[in-house]
Length: 172
Image 1 (tube, one colour):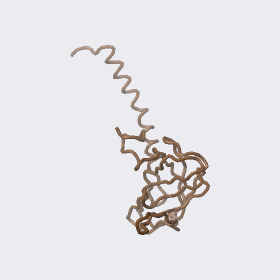
Image 2: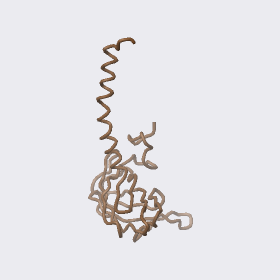
Image 3: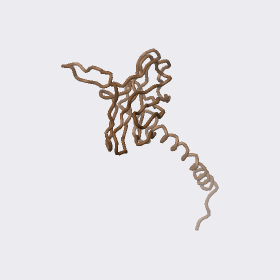
Image 4: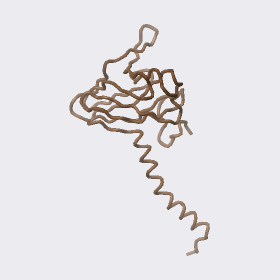
């Protein structure tokens, strides 16, 4: 068996010692992408970049893993003066936003908040939503209580969270 070169030994050592560093980074990324409040699992909270003083929206997926219904009653964030639950409805040829008193979460079902549909509206932004930043968003549920998630800010025109491995906010 040939004896390994010094360069090969250093390359192997570097790769092996770097492996423990990868696990915490993946765990941190996962923590941003998923949270739990009772039977409600919240995944992929994200927003588009927006300017201070303007408005923005937060999008996420809510999955009720329990046997009883729950409802999202509201949300809050230090990044906005006011937070409302909204839906988009077609009024003739025009899409209009409507404030919702709550969002129903049937047992065993998933509700996706996305552009053009249900969303969390952030009004009077107290800070800019800068691409690559995260913003805390506290969700208040009727049964599950409160939970704070970190909303990952994407590019202004983003359609959603990047696919796994594309955490930079753009596709490769």
